[in-house]
Length: 421
Ligand SMILES: Cc1cc2nc3c(=O)[nH]c(=O)nc-3n(C[C@H](O)[C@H](O)[C@H](O)COP(=O)(O)OP(=O)(O)OC[C@H]3O[C@@H](n4cnc5c(N)ncnc54)[C@H](O)[C@@H]3O)c2cc1C
Ligand SMILES: *[C@@H]1O[C@H](CO)[C@@H](O)[C@H](O)[C@H]1NC(C)=O
Ligand SMILES: *[C@@H]1O[C@H](CO)[C@@H](O)[C@H](O)[C@H]1NC(C)=O
Image (tube, rainbow, N blue to C red; front, side, top):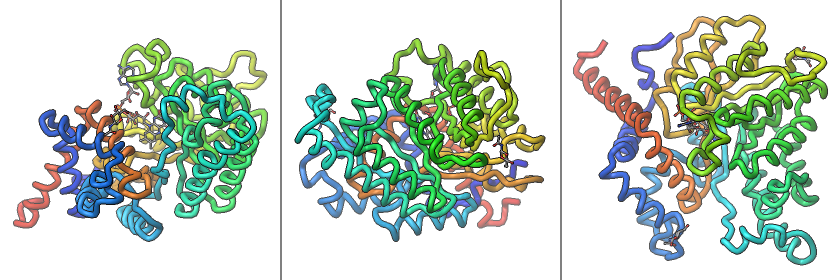
């Protein structure tokens, strides 16, 4: 199943770029100053430091960090990036829109101010409409079979307020979400609603279920919710959603992640150890893949049926152990979930992605997707900063990535001189 040199499928420029970024990210001496520089670039107001206004800065960033993690600045560039990924063997991409609505501290404190009157109109015009437009453009850039990822918090204060109060989306936002879902369904693109911080997540779960019910068919998902395995409450949320899907006769779209807010969310809601999170992730994945309840995923208490609805599953993880476990279950192929995809972020864990892509496998090839954002170099800086911080928190994995890239480079040099097999 595992090929000798999975990274052989990557173009040389990618290997060199990955080696550079992973080397910086795994070196404390290089990372600290790089992060400092990036955080300045990410929120500067000075034109010389704004990559969208300073062409030299833009050129340097674009060829390095931008190319490592992002899709392109316009439709033509995005298409080229996506094509090259598909040539390597990826099933397609998960496309996100880089621009974020950034609220000031005062705006954050006064979320309810968008409630009515002229203030509400202002919120619709400056927050909801740009979000909807960006999301619709992203949908147009995606090809049938691709995914588009979206964050509800990107829609601004009204969205934040409704989510924090577990209210349904406001009228303007609801109609924007409907347009997005309708366009996705008609184009054959699937939508991933991101999971976010805990204070908003119950609201996001409600909205995810609402739109899954509305747009998912009995056999396939158009809309996927994101389920964070590190939350102790996730199995019960998932059981509740599975029961709702079963009763409502629609397929549940599940994007399973470990969870990205360890540093900021209330610690007691999250599994006590990494090992517990890992066990929860693998256990829930196994139940969904086999369509069988297990110790990690129990049917909702009082459910009159314990049967499983159809599930469309995206296993979003860079963890090689989790990927291998899931693939072992899939290869048994006994009446389990069929609509399964794997996903990793662009620029990260290429050794995991490429191992999936190049599996000479008996049986079906896993469908593998890379997640990337598109937008101007300036717009992508905030996204890049978050990636850099994440790499810092995952030094072990970043080192594994660096070592894999280094080994691949050595392998190529050797094979140039006829040493490699
Ligand atoms: C395509 C894609 C989409 C994503 N979308 C989202 C999203 O919508 N929402 C979101 O929140 N995240 C999202 N993530 C990020 C994800 O939640 C993880 O943070 C990231 O993928 C790292 O986890 P891992 O499974 O790759 O593996 P690993 O690197 O093996 O695991 C790291 C993770 O383990 C958990 N962990 C680490 N230490 C501890 C500890 N002491 N106790 C308990 N748990 C611990 C944390 O969740 C940490 O992120 C996405 C990731 C990908 C690849
Ligand atoms: C960037 O944002 C942080 C807070 O988010 C702020 O403290 C800092 O002054 C900002 N830097 C610049 C250059 O604007
Ligand atoms: C699940 O999907 C299959 C086709 O893949 C379909 O025949 C079946 O009816 C669906 N199950 C439910 C409960 O809708």
